[in-house]
Length: 223
Image (cartoon, rainbow, N blue to C red):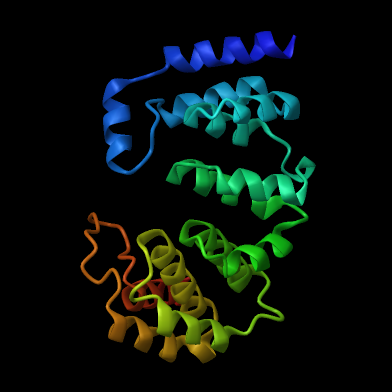
């Protein structure tokens, strides 16, 4: 029965394929052509189905994996299972959704954060930094924030793109959430100039940490 369901879902995903969307996604390193609004609508219709989610993930198809993430039960995955999934995620969107929608809700998130944070694979390490940023914002107790700033100061400038982006987010979050570290976080950002010239659309906040920190703190004060 489950095999038929996988076949049916894959056929429905194929019917949602849009070459224009695929071309846009390809420029960002993602290999799928499904409108995400339609993908979410399909997930809403399917509801939570853990077995189907696992089968869809096993297909290796990026769109099927995104759908699997939306219909899975995050707490049902074992720690080692999530580790294998993260390392085989393949595309940036699948990687990001897996971390944000599944791993962050898992009882194994802290163990995986510690394991991934210093992984020699920069893409895996970026997941560890993303989980660290989550803790900086929501559960900073026990984190060595000064130590994190030391690592960012020493390594962010020359880090590969995905890892650099994740470290920069952590830098900004420390500056936004922790006033006692704000001046140093802004200073590190100004000296390293990471993402200083990143093209930012109108009405969006620049990812350049000094601007990002200053803007978010201003908004907090305006509330």
